[in-house]
Image (cartoon, rainbow, N blue to C red):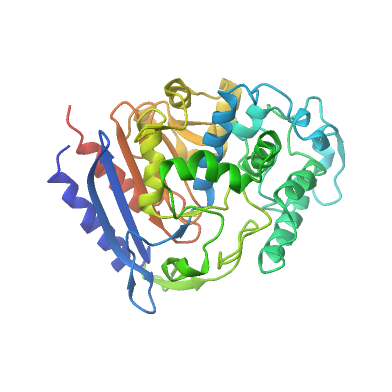
Length: 408
């Protein structure tokens, strides 16, 4: 890699912090399983001027999905889960699934029996019909009911801790899906259902399965569904970046509410271990997971996935009609498909940042980002804690620097 060209990263990060787009962030890059560099800027606690550091613990939100995908694929490659099998065979309460048809719009809508059940593949590809809730009054009935469940989960996450991982899956099974399973794409609670399914198949609490099969073998000591008291001082604060005036100036506001059933303080072991959003981690810890994927499923003698399984992730594609639905709903990810709870670059020339065909990964609601490129043996992890961030313009700028630094 052109290491001198990578020096542009720091100024991009510093500019984002200076303009209050982001309170603080860090980045780590590995190439050929060797650390190329680490960068950081800004604060994990703006008020107390605490730097955003390598040991800063972040709420990963949807980057939890990548871990859940790896957990599911580890059972799939052992023959314990079948990608093409009906979910109800693992979680029987999904047997009598209902769907909203055209008369199912709004809170007074009606539902009817679904024409086919949800498959495991639908959970992995977000084609189950479950969403994260209603965005407008005319949304399907099921989405309004999902919003009600999210509100209840947020209340529970604020200190009650009574709704379990399996409870969430069972509650969702009673909610009508927004389209016939396997006939549309919509981002939502599929990974949380998959977490409950893995719990059933493994016979372990979901957190215990992840700890035993992924975290302990990889030496991920700071990755879990909560942050114990002795590590709380390292947990980053969360901020929102909002426009301050009509001239583009921004300000940072503290954000201290639960979201999607995930507690804000992260200081208690939750009853709902969200397979879609619940994990905390650090840039170093999560990089060990990403290095495992980049290395074909193995890190430092510990094999988590088989090499062909990782290649399957990089080569996975949505069916053409489902790809059309994905393209309509996720225009910011043009050039990508979505399979196994991750984006996969299929037409790099259409992507909004430089990349390589087969590059895969995901991001989170608070802005953490991962990229796995097995062709270039390139691993990238970024963390930040900014609401509604996803893949930011800062992330795209940095990715452009990284990929333009690659040698032929």
